[in-house]
Each structure stands twice: as C-alpha cells, then as structure tokens.
Length: 525
Image (cartoon, rainbow, N blue to C red; front, side, top):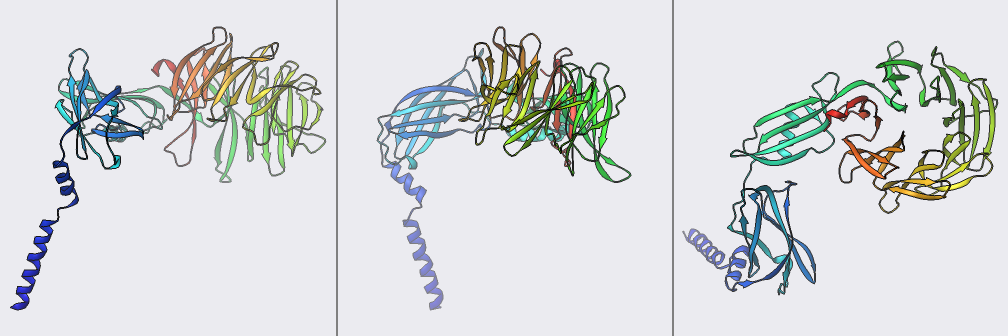
C-alpha cells in the first residue's frame, strides 16, 4: 500500500512541475505578449505577379542582412489586379505584414504576388529568431489541390508521352474553375509505333485533377534510326546506323544517304568496323569514308553512280583522322602524331595522291575555299583553338582563337569563340580585308551553318532550360530572328521546304537509339 501511495505522489509532483515549465513555443508566446506593438517603416522596391507557380503557398524570405534588412514576401495564389501593403507591425519576435488586394474586373490576374521591400530603422537583434506572418486584411488567397508537378506527371502518364524539357503552362479561370493550361512542343509519343514527335496541349482542373480538354498533333515524320554525319543544304543527308548481322550475331555499321528531293534513302556501305566519318564530294558524285579498324584508319571512296566502294592505299603507313573536299574534287586528309600533323591530297578524278607536307602543328580541322585553307590548331590548356589561314602551306596568317570556322564569302570568315568566364560560345564575323572582327552574335551558340544571301542559321542553347532555339541572322541588316524551339541541338535546317531534320537519342530507350526526324515548322508554333 505504501509503495502504491509513493508512486501516486511521484506522478503528482511530476505533473505539477511539468505544468510550471511551459514549452518553448508557450515561452515565446508569453514573451511576445509582454511586448507592445511597434509599427515598422518600410520601403517597397518591387511588386511582381509571379506566374512560375512552383510554389503557391505564402512565405517570407530574408534576402539581405548586411546593414539593410530586405525581405521577399510571397502572398500566395490570388486573383487581383494589384495589392497594397497596409502596414508592418512588430510584436516581440513576430513581424506581421498586413496586406489587401485591389480588384479591377478588367485586369484580374491569377498569380502569386511577390513584394520586395526593405525594413527601415528597426532594432532587430536576432534576425534568425524572427517569425514573419502575412495578415490578410482584405485579401482572399486561393487554394488548389493539384500543383504543377502533380499535373505534369498526370499528363505524361495519361497521354503516354516522354519529354526532356518543360512545357509552357499557366493558371487560368474557366467559369468558376481554376484550370492548368499546359502546352508541350516536340515531345515523344510512346504509343505511336513510329515514335514521332507531337505537340500536346491540355487543360486540367486544378482542384479535381480532371482533364477537361486536350489535343495531340503530330508534327514529324520518322526517317530512320541513325546518326547524321553530313548534310547538304536543302538536299541530302548522310548518316550511319548500327544493325545486327543475323548470320554472325555481330553488330555492323551501315552508311546511308537520304534525298529530300525524292524522299528516298539508300545504303551506300556496310562494315564490321567503325565508320568514323563520311562526306559528300563538292559535285555530289562521291562519298569519302574514314573507317577505323584494328590496324588503324583507312580511306574508302564510294562513287554514287554504282555505289561500289574502293580503298585508297598510301605508300607510307598513313592513318587519316580528318578529311575535307575542296571545290575541284580534291580530298585533303590529315593525320596527327604527337605535336605534328601530316597532310595528303587525293584527286578522285585521276587517282593521284600527293604529300602536302608535315607541319609542326596539331591540326584538328581544315576548311577550304578555292586556294585558301583555314587551319584549326589545338592549343594546349586553352578552351579556344588557334585559327589561321594559308594559301601555300608555307605562311600561316593568324585569324583569331575559337572553333568551327567557315568561309562566309571570299572576304569574310565566321567562327565560334568560347567565353572563358561563363563557358558560352559567341559567333564572330571576321573581315579579311580589314583584318578585324566586324560583328559578334552573343549567346551560347553550339553550331551554325551558312545560308545563301548572307544569312547564318545557328543553334542557341537556352540558359537554365533544357531546350534549344534555332535562329537566323542576317549579315546585311544585322538582325536576328527566331525560327523555333527544339529539344535537341542537332538541328539541320531546310529553308526551301520550311522544315528541319532533327537527330535525337530517345530518352526512354534503354538501348539509346538515335532517330532522325523531319519536322514541319508550320506546325511547331
């Protein structure tokens, strides 16, 4: 009996002491109750109506705390034409931001109002202990059950699509419903056996999750699987693909060409070794192929009239790594050894091989225009390469540092140059007569091609996005126009037919299959 009585007394004492020691929150509340309200002066720097919708819940974030206390107040999803900050009141460690909404029926916006403001002349010692509250004086925040990520997952699952990028989306009001309005460009339709690209638009009720409207539009034609090696503007595609030999159960590489003129494709060459590169001759009568095998690399020529490949033999053991045709169907070939490069020429018409010379340069690329040769030379520990020009392979005049040079015309050269601070590529135009850069196209340009009439088409990677924009630049008036947005940087523009060819690795294929599509530009936007 005494033991039971002792236990009861112990429990009673514990309860008494626990009641006399408030928890931390209660302690803070009691402390705040002892303070009087203090109105804080403030200065509003900016009011934004955010449509990103990544977060629609109200929140307050401290931006800076170095002599100046700046905060970003997100007021939560609402539908107003404007907002007012009525007052900011401090009581203890709590700071209450009083807001109200402005309603103009002709300018109502579904958005998340955000206010950047500086708190003035406040005696706030421990900023980290402050608790910010948003007090709605005359402001009605809106609630939705399905956020943007929930909706995008639902759409991709329902329509069985796959995408690398982010769609265009918005919150709109349809009668009494708040609706997600979603628009995808160039995404993969998994249900289609040819796996074409489609545009998809959908409207989803943000509170029920029901899909209330949708449209799926096919924008592409699947040409073939494979990797594009060469493209002749508005005419031919040269590509390779890997196939399985059923007899030997081994992989083989095949070289194909596709004609846009007659919409036909044909196999040119097949090998059990790797096809490193292939190029059309200047008159489109031949294709040159560099094949890599166990003994090194070898050169093959394929006449397009009979498609019978023949091997070119060199007296010395020569392993071509790079090749380039000139305007007279002479093929120049480069072999790199340590810090020097050996250059040969091969005349396809008379089967004549000549040694141009061995140079104390590590030549990575070669561009030819008549008797002028642009040389791209690797520079140790440099992001950009050395670009020079020669006409006699004796004197090399420096042009600049960069990559991927091209002859725009007989007087101008273009090339990419990487900015070492941000790792972005700009496109430069160099005047050989003035010996100076006359134009710079800024951006993050990955590749480009020369079009007729002094136009350049280029691929620009969009910063902070997983997509790319194809743009056209006019040298005559120095104006840039956007053509369309894409999910790949391997874009080949056919201006005459108003379409592009896109080389894409399928994002949902475990075998990483590369596909070639043609896309109708009139359907993209």
